[in-house]
Image 1 (cartoon, rainbow, N blue to C red):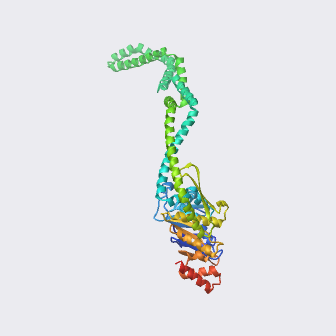
Image 2 (tube, rainbow, N blue to C red):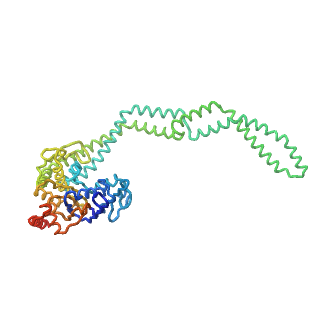
Image 3 (tube, one colour):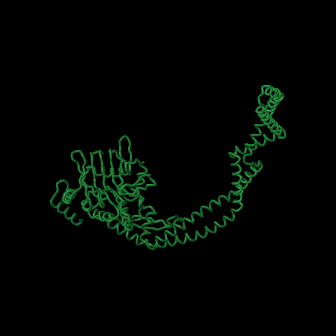
Amino acid sequence: MIERFYLKDYLSFQEAELNLKHGLVVFSGPSGSGKSILIESILSSVGLSSCDANICESSVTWDIDEEETGLENDEINVFKHIKKEKSRYFINNQSISKKSINSLTAKYLKHLSLRDFSDFENEGLLSILDNKIGEQALKLKTTYQQTFQAYSKVKKELEILEDEEKKIVELKEFAKFEIDRINTVNPKEGEDDELLEIKKELSKKEKALEMIGGANEIFNLEHLVSSALDTLDVDSAFFDDAMNELRSVLENAEEKFSALDEIDVEEILNRIEELGELKRRYGSIEEAIEYKEQKLQELEKYENIEVEKGELQKQYEQLSKEVTTLADNLTSLRSKTLKNFEKELNNYLKQLYLRDASVKLSQTKLSSLGQDILEIRLNDTDLAKISTGEFNRLRLAVLALKSESLQNVGGVLMLDEIDANLSGEESMSVAKVLKKLTNNFQIFVISHQPQLTSMGDQHFLVYKDGNISKTKELSFDEKINEIARIISGDTISDEAKKFARELLEANR
């Protein structure tokens, strides 16, 4: 529910603060006093409308889906809309997009002045019907949904397999082609690096041997250096070691380059080109080898597809029988309860002074809901063609049916002038249904009829002081005066006050 609402600077309102209770909350007042503005700003505070108020803010008891929104719940969550240069929305002072706040609010608040067909969607109507049946339907529904999930999974796998089977020849040929392409080259991991190193050595072989030949001239002068060191009485061991090490390095280099004489340079270059082509196609030699293994596995799978398909077909046929039987059983239970559902719905419609509705259960393809479609028509008229007043009262009847099985309390219904153009009896009938709905909902309603107004658990007068709109929660005696004004106009008669008191006393 909404526990508190605050509004600042919006059209004729400078400031308004409402401390709200659970139950039926009625707003009344003269035409043009700002009642609709107030409702619009409450909707705007929770992202279901937009207005130019400086601030509109609602403190609510609704739980926030912390994982979905990334926001944390407080003991009381504060939803806020601020309009300066642009609209901004906040929950607990943390910024949130209008789409996100709207999605969250829609789980808890319904605005019945909008022609919203969500309460007549198949899933919701079947849920009400199943709750009427009771535990037997709910257990059967759970078993059905589990079986349907398994059935859908196997069906999808089989469809994929059959689709693959249609392309099997092409897929097998492609897999073989790719395997042969890689096998023809027969690459080894790291081979490309080794060949590139050989190519590098070949490219510098001639120049390196020429330089080594020149460097070997130093050994022709080695004895002169040794003699000079002996003459100087210097130990020549360091020089001998250095020359021996140099001799070893040059000899090893000559041997390495001599070994390259046996290598076919053209063969090396061709091999590097083959491996380069694989790398260009697959990314690396390692990836080419991995891709070949993948294609070998696919080829094996294609070879075994008939076996796999046969097993899936057996599972599918078994699950198809099971899910169809469960759907038939669910349809049977729903069909037996349908007349009672229709009767209870029409009882509410009778209270609301509406003609009877017809309820039809028809079959369609299997879904997670079963095989049933539940449709409601008012006097055989499509819901899209009935009047707005009839549509909203029919929604009330459906919500009343639904509320009989609801366990949670905290949802909010907002109605602008649902009793507009209704007779006194019709207005009272709407009020009685709304009163029933307050077991599960906090309900905000604008009313111009004494009957509905008198049923309010909380009554706010919206009035103008000069050009400024203001609100005031009414006491019992103040309610009498306001209802009397609704009955007789600005000149309040004693008879109107008497009737107003009788209404309030009767509904206390």
